[in-house]
Amino acid sequence: MRRAQNLKGWLLCAPALSAMALVTAYPVFYAVRLSLYRYDLRHTADPDFVALRNYFSVLSSEVWWQALWNTLLITTVSVFFELVLGFALALLMHRAVFGRSALRSAVLVPYAIITVVAALAWKFAFDPTTGFVNSLFGIERAWLNEHWSAFAVIIFSEVWKTTPFMALLLLAGLSLIPDDVLKAAKVDGASAVQRFRLITLPLVKPSILVALLFRSLDAFRIFDSVYVLTRGAHGTESVSVIGYNTLIVRLNLGLGSAVSVLIFSCTLAIALLFIKGFGTPLLRKD
Amino acid sequence: MALRFARTDRLLESLGGLLAIAYALLPVIWIVSLSLKPGYELGDARFFPNTLSLEHYRAVFADPQFPAALLNSVGIASIATGLSILIAIFAAYAIVRLEFRGKRWIFYCTLAVAMFPPVSVIGPLFELWRTLELFDTWPGLILPYLSFTLPLAIWTLTAFFREIPWDLERAARVDGATPAQAFRLIILPLVVPGIFASAILVFIFAWNDFLFAASLTSTDRARTVPVAIAFFTGSSQFELPTGSIAAASVVVTIPVTALVLVFQRRIIAGLTAGAVKG
Image (cartoon, rainbow over all chains, first blue to last red; front, side, top):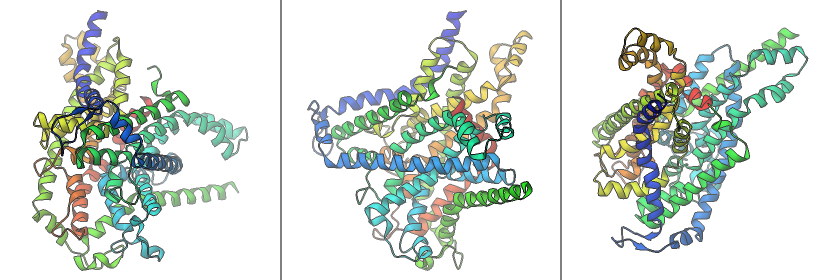
């Protein structure tokens, strides 16, 4: 009976596991292998074993470190704003009696929109000729042609698109708090701020950590917005843009795979940092 | 005093709600209004158009690129969604209903895939797809979408399956139904709403993807809407066809947004249950 259950369980999961392995596990091993070869489709058709030389090239190039720094900056700043805005939004949705469903619907709109379209909408909005942002503030500024303002637009666009996701995760956390606890605290004379700090926050902490982990990993692979808004110009390249450019635009599969493996390692490091460092309750027993 | 507090509270809440709605809708209204401006008004830096014109909509449908991309997107995203949900149903059923060794291990695997950076596999996939002749074809995109949406589908379905009264299935079995019959006749109708919600989430993922579509396609054969829009150059290389891009954006935004709004409640349940209850 027990053996039969084991077999049945694995058989039912097998299609899902093999599909996931086919497109992630196998290619990532293949990427590790490719990264050890000099393999440039534009110059040579045959791969040349070069051991770790591709990694030396990447790690000693300024471009990689600039992109890594950019990506970490985008990740931290955007996830920070998402958390603050998302929490405010979640509290609003949680408490709203009036217009609650309109609010929930509106919040889903950014989620449903293609990232490329959202980025283009903001690109046109900040554009000096087509956009309304400059005339709104009465300034003349080519937002996407300068390093810091381009960054600001990228982060703004990312925050707009993903705050709803954060808000919904936090809302789910908020809805797990029993009302009685908050009421009891109120009766005991705890102020709104105290109730928030001493009851709401600790109880929502697991949801916050899960949301932060997911959003950080997601923000770290940012590609669409950067590509649409600046194509990586003016020092705004993210690591995914570097990977895409090396692999698909310059067709340098060896060097590009080294970049890919490095990005994969960074992702792993971020995930471990969260799970070990903050004890994310993601892996709790069922 | 208390009454006044309550009133200001409610006022602030309503104000916050309105702000939030405006925040969420602003770029959508902007791109719709941009798409309706006639060509000579595009550079007037105003938010709303003075005169309405459908010229950009006519232009995008006259250009063969966009209808082809739309067809590719609809086809690829739908097939990927269908397959992903079908496979995820088996897995989610097993995870919820069966006790078997290695269940947690399967959970970790899906978690790992959900966190995976897609850019790490586009190189190998590009190389493999060229050898297998999957480059620039529908299956060449369906496969990655299927694999990357499986974690999402499995989690949301697991969350929905947990809510089902499985005793009903046992009762049916006692009455002589085969396991397959019990599942098809009793359980499936109960999970249809959950399946639908998961399907929309998966569809959005596939519909939204830009990286795979930009890397693994090269022509109208399989190029999807996000890539077509991002690479759209129009008639002149030096001028961005803003109006056409805006019109194309509206065409791909409105149907999906409408779908999401109609099934709003279920989708929120799916998103949050899958993520928080794990």
